[in-house]
Image (cartoon, rainbow over all chains, first blue to last red):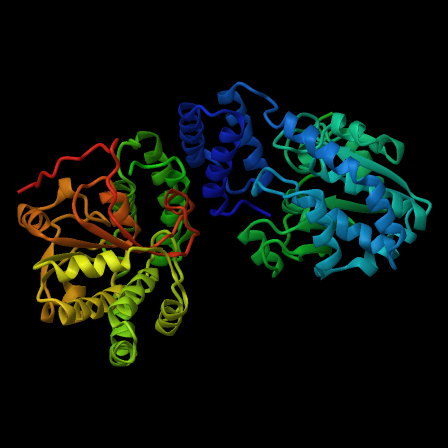
Length: 299
Length: 299
């Protein structure tokens, strides 16, 4: 999807929150806001929202002089979620349909996000929400069928902390089908998105091949991805894409994609016909009038 | 109070909503957003939030080529509220403490606002909310005492539609004390703020002397007010100031002011220690460290 006008004030809000998360210096906060405001007239709405966010955060990081202001928050989120791993494993073992429960948990884990929203509560809340909330869009049966008929799964990760829930879901996938899973992380830190370090910190490499997108966009922007990553993308039988950013990036693709996300802004909620905060498990339904973006790698 | 950094992204959101309320042309929406974004680096945070809003809307109105895009919405709000006047009069007559009920209704009527929020529902909702919600800050007894010891009341109005509830409150004031009331409107249209035309449309002139602030700021910015308006301001025994903008404009004044408002943004809610949407009836409590702004008129 293209950037909406609503994304521009939202970028300003995100800029202010990111600046405040980094420093208490109000002069820096103001400089960040002014710089992002100055950027807005130059932004093309033909870009996808995560591309806009990517440009915005690069500018913010330049001004604050820190290329990874959320490093501590990310490490804490990983550790906190990891500490609950054994308990959640038991929740899944006791579950009537453990794959469905793992999907719901992975979607609820998508609330660990320092971009469009900021407070994600704690792991207990995530588990409670996952177990008590229905899926507002529920293509779970299709995902299950697709997995059982697949060999290669590509799993597009989103945020640190959340990836513990992704690992649990991947373990469930492997328990119902003989699939090889490739887990994709960002090349460099942006917001609290998971990088290779985060994946290793939660033991993702014990269940999947971890590869980098080769891009620091906070989503899978195919035109920015490496040839290696695109090879995985093209050869996958099924793609699991986590988070709103990946929906914004891939909603016009023709691939066999399942989007697992929480709707985090009014624009996306309206597009999907759900409420903000709703859990979504949606199979890709390419539109007839969709404009394909070229699947060209940079390498 | 001075402008907070949070007011800057909020101004962007307001700009987009105002543009959309005026035209369906997305190119105009974009031009409005770009212009307001371009304005942000030049804005001084020493200004009060309604002064920032004033500058923003002037720019928006220039771009859309309409100096009163909310004229129809304002007329409709006046008419809709006026149609309920007899019924609300009966609600007050049946009320145990009709002045308190009139205060609550006047505060609930403050939800008719097209600035920081946009949907105000309908008059039935306003009446229901007024009758069922407690005041989060409740200086009602002090207001009642103050009125009974007063001769001159200055009532600083806020929005069209809302002024029907203001008229009802003024009628209640007059039923408990022999006071003369002066009702202040904006000089020119801005957002859906009440001007002289609105005051006349709801019969405000039958219960109060209606004067213009001589300013088109969406609040009472004393440094922009006429000498006539300031004369009323200085000679008033008690001032009733409606809406968040008037709080933002007058919170450091030493006068005997009662603020009647709904908290509409996180900044003000936090300052007042209330939740967004809460009803507030707060007596002025000048701070020791307050910086006084000069009470200088332009005429």
